[in-house]
Length: 501
Image 1 (cartoon, rainbow, N blue to C red):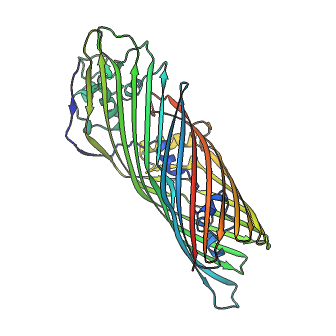
Image 2: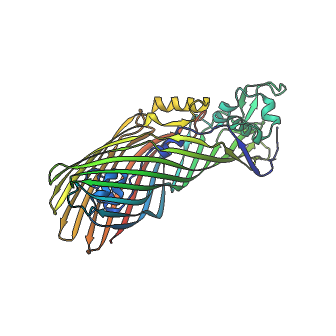
Image 3: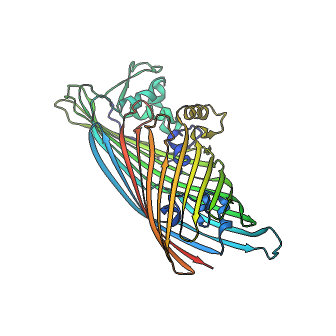
């Protein structure tokens, strides 16, 4: 039996081998509802309203609705609760964070020519933290059937023994690295150990016991969006706008998987415990644009239409991992096999294209006393693509995404009622699952409420929003794909300060 402590020199290895998966793409393809407190309180239903800096995220024509220059800053408190159920065992994990999630300003220029139909022109700059990645997830339970050994076997099968035995971790591509870890950690064995060309492997994890599992996932980071906006008003009845958006992201994920096997010990050493740790760091930039229009059909009725292009991301990944396995035998001392390459894989930069979005909106304004608003948005997640598309790996992932992802509809409703200087607000949001099976990631349902007070040149808005969504994703992408049922509840409190100049 091997009793080797594998410790390679610390360093970076640069490789063109891809490791991107559908979960990486969906991290950036899915939206989140962030912005000013008024925007959040009305459920984000601002496509036909405008007059709010975060409304530019829906319809860029909204900046021309402003009557005066305005600056807004929003602070938000995020609370995330994940309820996990893994083979009947329930666990709960919570996270709290505080962030400056919006800041921006709009400047309105009126046309000095009273005979012109083009009444005003506006310029705006707005930052939104589109997605706060601070989150923790813990799942635990006893799996009566499957071990993580299937994960390492699925990668090792087909790879010559000489490659797993004599090569260094840094010299292998991502798939072979997983087989390498399993072999060097004594989790898998070659069927024919005396044949360097052996390509079939068997497990060293005993059958007949239950497999107790713990899976911990911790993430943090952000996905920011900086919008440069221009809009104009025609006869104060038609508003047209354009956004040029710069995106930047910084995402870190740490996962730790633990397995404990309860099978009776035999005279031969077998794996009884193991821990498998992975670290992912993704960073990069992107670009998108938006065009939109708002029509004031009557004094009360407004219609909006907006198109948001794909976001073209340029991303880079850094990835590291290590494995600790404990071997036990009857009447023998336990042995530990540590496989810690201390190598960070730096993958070749790649591109990701997220799907575009089309939003139609309707609003009815009751003079100065209140309003109701509704947005309806469509998005086709099956158009999500890694690039270059002629790359064989990316092509297979893109084909898979096209087959499992679906078109979605999203509805947002908002209402506001004013009592002199006090505004009362409420909102609702429903978004369909981007997956055809509706299980991997379920539908999202959200509710919101808030209030605002107008001090004159200064306004203060406060909002509370909550959203629920279920999901079921495997702990690993192949070989061992069992996972927990997760119910996620996101609660948010936002405070916005607005200053008219």
